[in-house]
Image 1 (tube, rainbow, N blue to C red):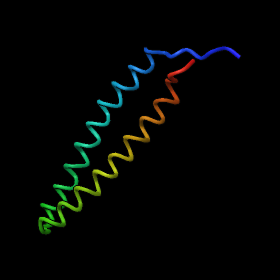
Image 2 (tube, helix red, strand yellow):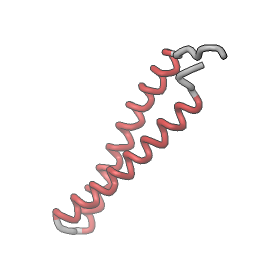
Image 3 (tube, helix red, strand yellow):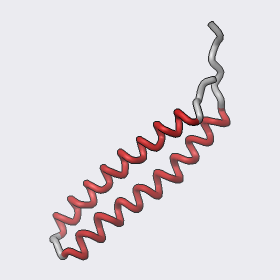
Length: 77
């Protein structure tokens, strides 16, 4: 069985894309929680709860993105 080689180019592409897309997703999730809490006039605790929930969703979406990016650009060939 042949030894698999680490592909640095694919790894770098996935890492850079994960940083870019992950930052955008998390910033949008933070803004969503803050905006909903502020527009609806809910208290500070509810707004923080919404921010936490939306950030948890953002982390999940970032993880899904990275998993799919690793399938498209495999680290080992």
